[in-house]
Image (cartoon, one colour):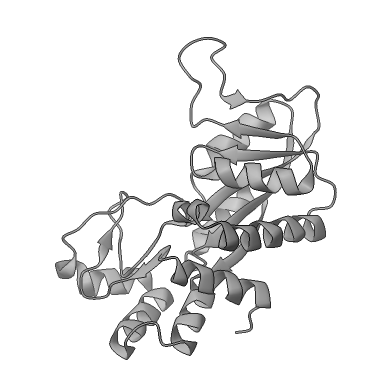
Length: 228
């Protein structure tokens, strides 16, 4: 498996800022009930300006190179909002953000900001993606407002669940991600961030998450939030 310089550099940033955690002996439990020896919290990255600048510069370049013309950038509530703002600034494009559901007062808006014409080419920005299911509510709202949504961007893609790309295909959206678990594991091995037992357990999980969960369910007392 080969990785780009940007993917490995982003993976190292996630490790150095403790935005990804490994714990094979006491697995994490997500809100979905899934257990995992790895956990990602990309929200932390907003507090690291140097690292954040690298990631957002790389993200903006990826969108320029891969998406063609972009008219507007949309952030998904809540973790996608700051990254959409950073990228919109670099692209010098308007920005909006999308709620998970319309607010219950005032204009009852689900989209904050201005979409003043149809067929604007919009990129949805979020922090990460596991299986992609939560993207649908944002994409549907943007399309209902008249936007053309063919691309989504995340800093981190789990990259281990087949349904992730299947969900994006069904929504007719191409996912662009700076890095994924395979790149993080590559850097963690290369730079010896963790002991061999932990690395082996994580690699086993990445190859077969469901089997790993079955074999390690008895180890998992704690619960962490995760988004998709």
